[in-house]
Image (cartoon, rainbow, N blue to C red; front, side, top):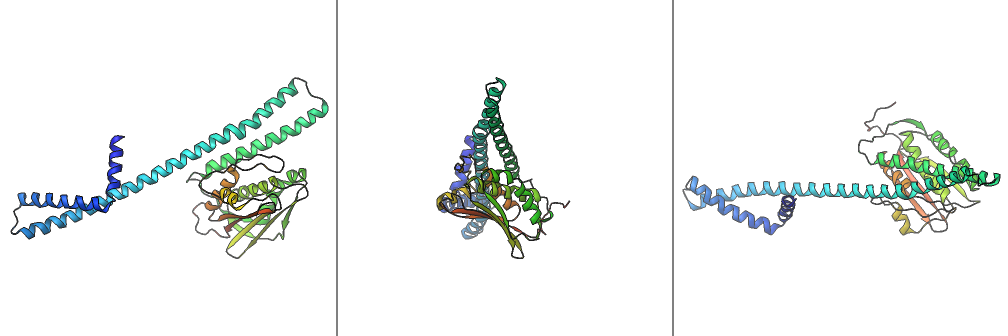
Length: 318
Protein backbone atom coordinates (compact mmCIF):
# COMPACT_ATOMS: atom_id res chain seq x y z
CA UNK A 1 0.00 0.00 0.00
CA UNK A 2 2.89 2.35 0.83
CA UNK A 3 4.50 1.63 -2.55
CA UNK A 4 1.23 2.47 -4.32
CA UNK A 5 0.93 5.74 -2.41
CA UNK A 6 4.56 6.57 -3.20
CA UNK A 7 4.03 5.99 -6.91
CA UNK A 8 0.76 7.94 -6.87
CA UNK A 9 2.45 10.92 -5.18
CA UNK A 10 5.33 10.66 -7.64
CA UNK A 11 2.91 10.66 -10.58
CA UNK A 12 1.32 13.86 -9.25
CA UNK A 13 4.74 15.51 -9.02
CA UNK A 14 5.44 14.54 -12.62
CA UNK A 15 2.55 16.78 -13.66
CA UNK A 16 4.43 19.77 -12.19
CA UNK A 17 6.48 21.54 -14.88
CA UNK A 18 9.29 22.53 -12.45
CA UNK A 19 9.67 18.96 -11.25
CA UNK A 20 9.81 17.65 -14.83
CA UNK A 21 12.37 20.33 -15.76
CA UNK A 22 14.54 19.41 -12.78
CA UNK A 23 14.37 15.72 -13.60
CA UNK A 24 15.22 16.47 -17.25
CA UNK A 25 18.35 18.40 -16.18
CA UNK A 26 19.54 15.58 -13.90
CA UNK A 27 18.78 12.99 -16.57
CA UNK A 28 20.64 15.02 -19.21
CA UNK A 29 23.81 15.23 -17.11
CA UNK A 30 23.59 11.52 -16.33
CA UNK A 31 23.11 10.60 -19.99
CA UNK A 32 25.99 12.88 -21.03
CA UNK A 33 28.35 11.21 -18.56
CA UNK A 34 27.19 7.69 -19.43
CA UNK A 35 27.53 8.20 -23.17
CA UNK A 36 30.98 9.72 -22.74
CA UNK A 37 32.17 6.65 -20.82
CA UNK A 38 30.80 4.27 -23.46
CA UNK A 39 31.69 6.27 -26.54
CA UNK A 40 33.95 9.34 -26.11
CA UNK A 41 32.68 12.33 -28.09
CA UNK A 42 34.62 14.05 -30.83
CA UNK A 43 33.53 17.34 -29.30
CA UNK A 44 31.75 18.59 -26.18
CA UNK A 45 28.79 19.94 -28.16
CA UNK A 46 28.15 16.65 -29.99
CA UNK A 47 27.87 14.75 -26.72
CA UNK A 48 25.68 17.41 -25.15
CA UNK A 49 23.32 17.45 -28.14
CA UNK A 50 22.97 13.65 -28.08
CA UNK A 51 22.33 13.64 -24.34
CA UNK A 52 19.66 16.37 -24.62
CA UNK A 53 17.86 14.59 -27.50
CA UNK A 54 17.81 11.23 -25.73
CA UNK A 55 16.72 12.87 -22.46
CA UNK A 56 13.84 14.69 -24.14
CA UNK A 57 12.58 11.52 -25.86
CA UNK A 58 12.82 9.32 -22.79
CA UNK A 59 11.63 12.04 -20.40
CA UNK A 60 8.55 12.85 -22.48
CA UNK A 61 7.63 9.17 -22.78
CA UNK A 62 7.98 8.56 -19.05
CA UNK A 63 6.07 11.72 -18.17
CA UNK A 64 3.24 10.78 -20.53
CA UNK A 65 2.99 7.26 -19.11
CA UNK A 66 2.87 8.57 -15.54
CA UNK A 67 0.15 11.08 -16.45
CA UNK A 68 -1.93 8.35 -18.10
CA UNK A 69 -1.49 6.12 -15.05
CA UNK A 70 -2.53 8.96 -12.75
CA UNK A 71 -5.62 9.70 -14.83
CA UNK A 72 -6.65 6.03 -14.75
CA UNK A 73 -6.13 5.87 -10.99
CA UNK A 74 -8.37 8.89 -10.48
CA UNK A 75 -11.03 7.31 -12.71
CA UNK A 76 -10.95 4.07 -10.72
CA UNK A 77 -11.17 6.00 -7.44
CA UNK A 78 -14.24 7.86 -8.74
CA UNK A 79 -15.88 4.56 -9.82
CA UNK A 80 -15.19 2.95 -6.44
CA UNK A 81 -16.57 5.98 -4.62
CA UNK A 82 -19.75 5.90 -6.77
CA UNK A 83 -20.15 2.16 -6.09
CA UNK A 84 -19.77 2.74 -2.34
CA UNK A 85 -22.41 5.48 -2.43
CA UNK A 86 -24.79 3.20 -4.37
CA UNK A 87 -24.30 0.45 -1.77
CA UNK A 88 -25.03 2.90 1.05
CA UNK A 89 -28.20 4.04 -0.71
CA UNK A 90 -29.35 0.44 -1.14
CA UNK A 91 -28.67 -0.35 2.51
CA UNK A 92 -30.68 2.72 3.54
CA UNK A 93 -33.62 1.75 1.35
CA UNK A 94 -33.58 -1.87 2.50
CA UNK A 95 -33.37 -0.93 6.18
CA UNK A 96 -36.09 1.74 6.13
CA UNK A 97 -38.48 1.51 3.21
CA UNK A 98 -38.80 -2.23 2.86
CA UNK A 99 -38.39 -3.28 6.48
CA UNK A 100 -41.04 -0.76 7.65
CA UNK A 101 -43.98 -2.10 5.61
CA UNK A 102 -42.98 -5.70 6.37
CA UNK A 103 -43.04 -4.96 10.09
CA UNK A 104 -46.51 -3.41 9.66
CA UNK A 105 -47.74 -6.48 7.79
CA UNK A 106 -46.33 -8.81 10.45
CA UNK A 107 -47.98 -6.77 13.23
CA UNK A 108 -51.36 -6.66 11.51
CA UNK A 109 -51.28 -10.39 10.79
CA UNK A 110 -50.45 -11.03 14.44
CA UNK A 111 -53.54 -9.06 15.49
CA UNK A 112 -55.71 -10.98 13.02
CA UNK A 113 -54.35 -14.32 14.22
CA UNK A 114 -55.18 -13.48 17.81
CA UNK A 115 -58.83 -12.78 16.91
CA UNK A 116 -58.48 -9.28 18.36
CA UNK A 117 -60.37 -7.60 15.52
CA UNK A 118 -64.01 -6.99 14.72
CA UNK A 119 -65.42 -7.52 11.22
CA UNK A 120 -65.07 -3.81 10.38
CA UNK A 121 -61.53 -3.73 11.73
CA UNK A 122 -60.69 -6.82 9.68
CA UNK A 123 -61.94 -5.09 6.50
CA UNK A 124 -59.84 -2.06 7.36
CA UNK A 125 -56.89 -4.35 8.06
CA UNK A 126 -57.19 -6.00 4.63
CA UNK A 127 -57.13 -2.57 2.97
CA UNK A 128 -54.01 -1.60 4.92
CA UNK A 129 -52.34 -4.91 4.07
CA UNK A 130 -53.07 -4.37 0.39
CA UNK A 131 -51.52 -0.90 0.49
CA UNK A 132 -48.41 -2.10 2.32
CA UNK A 133 -47.87 -5.09 0.04
CA UNK A 134 -48.44 -3.01 -3.10
CA UNK A 135 -45.95 -0.43 -1.90
CA UNK A 136 -43.36 -3.09 -1.07
CA UNK A 137 -43.84 -4.84 -4.44
CA UNK A 138 -43.48 -1.59 -6.38
CA UNK A 139 -40.42 -0.59 -4.39
CA UNK A 140 -38.82 -4.02 -4.90
CA UNK A 141 -39.44 -3.79 -8.65
CA UNK A 142 -37.86 -0.35 -8.77
CA UNK A 143 -34.88 -1.58 -6.76
CA UNK A 144 -34.31 -4.50 -9.11
CA UNK A 145 -34.62 -2.29 -12.20
CA UNK A 146 -32.39 0.35 -10.61
CA UNK A 147 -29.66 -2.19 -9.85
CA UNK A 148 -29.93 -3.53 -13.41
CA UNK A 149 -29.67 0.01 -14.82
CA UNK A 150 -26.29 0.45 -13.11
CA UNK A 151 -24.81 -2.40 -15.16
CA UNK A 152 -23.11 -1.46 -18.39
CA UNK A 153 -24.14 -4.85 -19.80
CA UNK A 154 -27.85 -4.00 -19.41
CA UNK A 155 -28.68 -3.03 -22.99
CA UNK A 156 -32.14 -2.00 -24.27
CA UNK A 157 -34.06 -4.48 -26.43
CA UNK A 158 -35.44 -2.35 -29.25
CA UNK A 159 -38.59 -3.06 -31.22
CA UNK A 160 -41.34 -1.05 -32.91
CA UNK A 161 -44.23 -0.13 -30.56
CA UNK A 162 -47.38 1.97 -30.52
CA UNK A 163 -46.96 4.85 -28.08
CA UNK A 164 -50.72 4.96 -27.49
CA UNK A 165 -50.72 1.31 -26.40
CA UNK A 166 -47.72 1.78 -24.09
CA UNK A 167 -49.34 4.83 -22.47
CA UNK A 168 -52.76 3.19 -22.05
CA UNK A 169 -51.27 0.00 -20.58
CA UNK A 170 -49.36 2.08 -18.02
CA UNK A 171 -52.31 4.30 -17.11
CA UNK A 172 -54.53 1.27 -16.47
CA UNK A 173 -52.21 0.26 -13.61
CA UNK A 174 -53.00 3.49 -11.76
CA UNK A 175 -56.76 3.77 -12.32
CA UNK A 176 -57.52 2.29 -8.90
CA UNK A 177 -54.98 4.48 -7.08
CA UNK A 178 -56.27 7.59 -8.87
CA UNK A 179 -59.86 6.68 -8.04
CA UNK A 180 -59.07 6.19 -4.35
CA UNK A 181 -57.54 9.70 -4.20
CA UNK A 182 -60.36 11.13 -6.37
CA UNK A 183 -57.82 12.34 -8.91
CA UNK A 184 -58.72 12.44 -12.61
CA UNK A 185 -56.17 10.95 -14.99
CA UNK A 186 -56.44 12.07 -18.61
CA UNK A 187 -54.50 11.20 -21.77
CA UNK A 188 -54.59 14.33 -23.94
CA UNK A 189 -54.92 14.13 -27.71
CA UNK A 190 -54.05 10.43 -28.09
CA UNK A 191 -52.60 9.79 -31.53
CA UNK A 192 -51.07 6.84 -33.34
CA UNK A 193 -47.29 7.24 -33.14
CA UNK A 194 -44.82 4.40 -33.60
CA UNK A 195 -41.49 4.41 -31.78
CA UNK A 196 -38.51 2.07 -31.86
CA UNK A 197 -37.71 1.55 -28.19
CA UNK A 198 -37.56 -0.92 -25.30
CA UNK A 199 -41.21 -1.27 -24.21
CA UNK A 200 -40.50 -2.30 -20.61
CA UNK A 201 -37.99 0.50 -20.06
CA UNK A 202 -40.43 3.02 -21.57
CA UNK A 203 -43.21 1.87 -19.21
CA UNK A 204 -40.91 1.96 -16.16
CA UNK A 205 -40.17 5.65 -16.81
CA UNK A 206 -43.84 6.51 -17.40
CA UNK A 207 -44.96 4.50 -14.34
CA UNK A 208 -42.64 6.39 -12.05
CA UNK A 209 -43.69 9.78 -13.39
CA UNK A 210 -47.41 8.97 -13.05
CA UNK A 211 -46.82 7.51 -9.58
CA UNK A 212 -45.09 10.72 -8.47
CA UNK A 213 -47.86 12.86 -9.95
CA UNK A 214 -50.47 10.88 -8.00
CA UNK A 215 -48.39 11.02 -4.86
CA UNK A 216 -48.37 14.83 -4.80
CA UNK A 217 -51.96 15.39 -5.99
CA UNK A 218 -54.95 16.03 -3.74
CA UNK A 219 -58.64 15.25 -4.11
CA UNK A 220 -60.31 16.86 -7.12
CA UNK A 221 -57.08 17.56 -8.99
CA UNK A 222 -56.14 16.31 -12.45
CA UNK A 223 -53.15 14.55 -14.02
CA UNK A 224 -52.59 14.98 -17.76
CA UNK A 225 -50.43 12.69 -19.90
CA UNK A 226 -49.53 14.20 -23.24
CA UNK A 227 -47.22 13.08 -26.02
CA UNK A 228 -46.22 14.36 -29.44
CA UNK A 229 -43.40 14.12 -31.94
CA UNK A 230 -41.30 16.66 -33.80
CA UNK A 231 -40.47 14.10 -36.46
CA UNK A 232 -37.19 12.94 -34.93
CA UNK A 233 -38.05 12.40 -31.29
CA UNK A 234 -41.02 11.62 -29.09
CA UNK A 235 -41.75 13.96 -26.17
CA UNK A 236 -43.91 12.69 -23.30
CA UNK A 237 -45.21 15.00 -20.56
CA UNK A 238 -46.86 14.11 -17.24
CA UNK A 239 -48.47 17.18 -15.69
CA UNK A 240 -50.08 17.53 -12.26
CA UNK A 241 -51.59 20.44 -10.35
CA UNK A 242 -50.33 19.23 -6.99
CA UNK A 243 -47.89 20.58 -4.42
CA UNK A 244 -45.00 21.33 -6.79
CA UNK A 245 -41.55 22.30 -5.53
CA UNK A 246 -39.08 25.17 -5.55
CA UNK A 247 -36.14 25.32 -7.95
CA UNK A 248 -33.59 24.13 -5.39
CA UNK A 249 -35.59 20.97 -4.65
CA UNK A 250 -36.16 20.43 -8.37
CA UNK A 251 -32.41 20.55 -9.01
CA UNK A 252 -31.83 18.03 -6.21
CA UNK A 253 -34.38 15.47 -7.44
CA UNK A 254 -33.02 15.69 -11.00
CA UNK A 255 -29.41 15.25 -9.88
CA UNK A 256 -27.62 12.29 -11.44
CA UNK A 257 -24.88 12.31 -8.80
CA UNK A 258 -26.90 11.42 -5.72
CA UNK A 259 -30.12 9.77 -4.62
CA UNK A 260 -32.39 12.36 -3.01
CA UNK A 261 -34.90 11.23 -0.38
CA UNK A 262 -38.35 12.26 -1.60
CA UNK A 263 -40.77 14.29 0.52
CA UNK A 264 -44.00 12.66 1.80
CA UNK A 265 -47.03 12.80 -0.50
CA UNK A 266 -50.36 14.51 0.12
CA UNK A 267 -51.66 11.33 1.82
CA UNK A 268 -48.38 10.95 3.74
CA UNK A 269 -47.02 8.45 1.18
CA UNK A 270 -43.33 7.82 1.70
CA UNK A 271 -40.75 7.40 -1.04
CA UNK A 272 -37.09 6.75 -1.66
CA UNK A 273 -36.27 8.79 -4.76
CA UNK A 274 -35.11 5.63 -6.53
CA UNK A 275 -37.96 5.76 -9.06
CA UNK A 276 -36.93 9.12 -10.47
CA UNK A 277 -33.23 8.23 -10.42
CA UNK A 278 -34.08 5.02 -12.27
CA UNK A 279 -36.09 6.96 -14.85
CA UNK A 280 -33.17 9.34 -15.48
CA UNK A 281 -30.80 6.38 -15.98
CA UNK A 282 -33.19 4.59 -18.32
CA UNK A 283 -33.85 7.60 -20.56
CA UNK A 284 -30.10 8.00 -20.98
CA UNK A 285 -29.77 4.34 -21.95
CA UNK A 286 -32.53 4.88 -24.52
CA UNK A 287 -30.59 7.85 -25.98
CA UNK A 288 -33.07 10.33 -24.53
CA UNK A 289 -33.30 12.75 -21.62
CA UNK A 290 -35.58 13.65 -18.71
CA UNK A 291 -36.31 17.13 -17.36
CA UNK A 292 -39.03 18.98 -15.45
CA UNK A 293 -40.72 22.27 -14.68
CA UNK A 294 -42.24 22.94 -11.27
CA UNK A 295 -43.72 25.76 -9.21
CA UNK A 296 -44.42 25.46 -5.52
CA UNK A 297 -48.16 25.01 -4.73
CA UNK A 298 -48.95 25.02 -8.47
CA UNK A 299 -47.78 21.61 -9.65
CA UNK A 300 -45.10 19.99 -11.78
CA UNK A 301 -44.63 18.77 -15.33
CA UNK A 302 -42.09 16.03 -15.98
CA UNK A 303 -40.93 15.42 -19.52
CA UNK A 304 -38.87 12.76 -21.21
CA UNK A 305 -37.85 12.57 -24.84
CA UNK A 306 -36.73 9.55 -26.88
CA UNK A 307 -35.64 9.19 -30.49
CA UNK A 308 -38.36 7.84 -32.77
CA UNK A 309 -35.85 5.54 -34.44
CA UNK A 310 -32.78 3.90 -32.91
CA UNK A 311 -31.11 2.79 -36.13
CA UNK A 312 -27.68 2.74 -34.46
CA UNK A 313 -28.61 0.32 -31.68
CA UNK A 314 -26.73 -2.95 -31.32
CA UNK A 315 -29.27 -5.06 -29.43
CA UNK A 316 -31.29 -7.60 -31.45
CA UNK A 317 -34.90 -7.10 -32.38
CA UNK A 318 -37.52 -9.60 -31.35
